Amino acid sequence: MLLKSQDVSYCQLVRQFGTISEIVSGVNYQGNLFVRGNSYPHQQRQVAIAEMRRSYLDPEPAVACLLVADGEIETIWYEDRYILKIVEDANDIVTYFNLAQLVEEMRSPQGVKIENRSQSFRLPYLRCAIGREMVDWMSTKLSISRPHAVQLGQRSIDENWLRNLSNKQPFGDNDLYYQFCMDK
Image: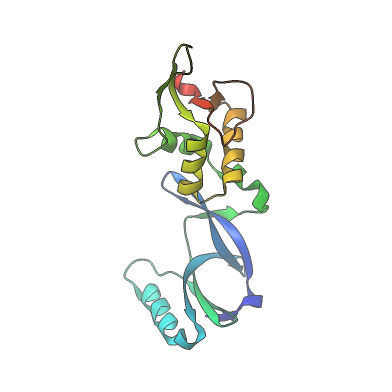
């Protein structure tokens, strides 16, 4: 279906795939949610239509598609069964992440670097990570901004998934040590 940009509502969507929740660009058309596919210049509309036709006729379950013209660019949008909900407030994006799944991923071998660390002449801190490295991992893995990663780290502290070993300061994009509560 070929639509103009004013026929759809652009939004951010929460997409759950496996153990990871991610925020993706989407459109809402008549109550149905679609995620962004490829974009083409207006002159390549037939290429876009051919791609949509292939997606719909694929032996896998048929996927509804939209072609939305926005100026000189036409973008394919696909219906996606992994979409959970619309993000109502972009500033509140961190409330949509499942902390149990996030902590599991962060503690996995592909997660943040967790190791025993020492500071000056104090006893070592066992199985901890550095705030800055956690922010790096969350921003990259979850495709969120660094300030949102800091908010997500603070939410992890507030909901007792994480604790600050150095002091009682809030979670930060810093060199302080943090430990997952199940690792105490």
